[in-house]
Length: 177
Image (cartoon, rainbow, N blue to C red):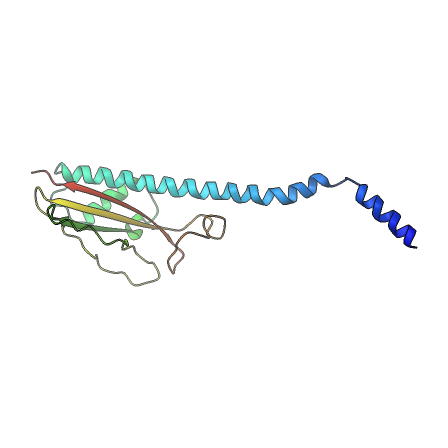
């Protein structure tokens, strides 16, 4: 009986059928996670680049005097239109604008004030249109739903209570006379 068992075990050890399957089972999940990570990262990068573009074009319009006087709904609409983000950009975008004294510089708070769909709507924290020849800081925070919230990158993104992550962009400008 022991000889029969030893013979079967040695034959099992020499058999190489299924080696490719074992390698596939070990390597495939790693490649899939890498693929999902790269897809999510590319979508986040695209969203951030489009928000940067929209904010830059909006700041250009303000600086050249096309959006005079600059008010919150106008600037928010311009950022959403220029960025081509689609969806409910107007609901998920929060703007913060503040005049800055160039001799005693104090920037915006370190943490961006973003919307939270699970909380009641907050008023604009700070939005002061400023005057001619005054340095202004403008920050835009866009909340979005990750494509794959439980996959590779989506699981480690900092999210709010409603499961949305944020992309933040900031710009400075001097309104021309």
